[in-house]
Length: 156
Image 1: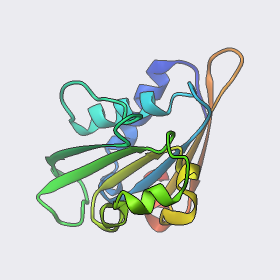
Image 2: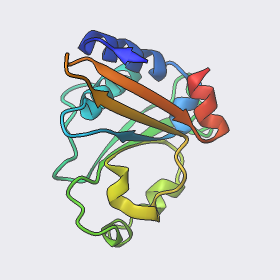
Image 3: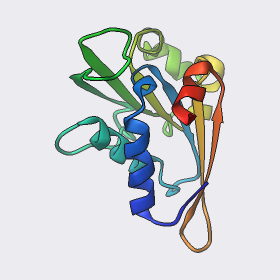
Image 4: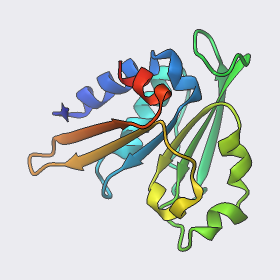
């Protein structure tokens, strides 16, 4: 798949936001600096209904959001919990464990993870991995890989 411009990124993100399985997914975002991971997340969160400024969690490591779960399969909760992680600044995968993220990843909701490799083998298996590669013409090549039935539902 290719995203020729930011409008294509937004279109894909909004389509993914309409998939009921999004409310219970763990999505890993892979790609170099500037590939468009955070831009994609911003469009996805806007598509889900997040209002206002959506900050990058580069310094905070995680940004959390709570939305009404209208029409989404979020484990039959009344609200959709969303966590956007950015592990770019991790120097050691043990920081993941020390930060207490195990409980968040075990709970219901949507988890979006940038730089998952920095957490080592601490992360659970993702439902979907999205690899974003910036091409010389500034378009993006996207590879989507589903690892679970939830991931497959997202790609249907």
